View 1 (cartoon, helix red, strand yellow):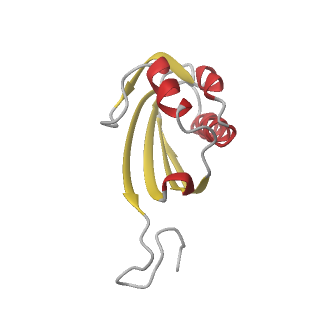
View 2: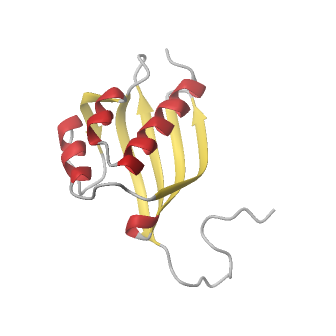
Length: 122
């Protein structure tokens, strides 16, 4: 089984591929029969490649990465889409991504608390 640290490195490689618009590199980190829980994208490596091909390079800034067991969670600012996202990736024993969930929301110009969506205040 891959370690949580190697799984975090794999997710970092995926985000590098997002930034480069290199959807072919997804095959290095995602299994062919990948399961997708985002309602706008289909299952499978080909589906996720096709989904991201339409955007080209994605400007994304990762703020937090948390790993436990075969899961890695990423809190990120998808600047290309003006979205805040929390992505959850599940890994197989070979260290490849086999499943993905996400929660996305628009980044507002202001917030009721005055705190932005990405800083850590304490």
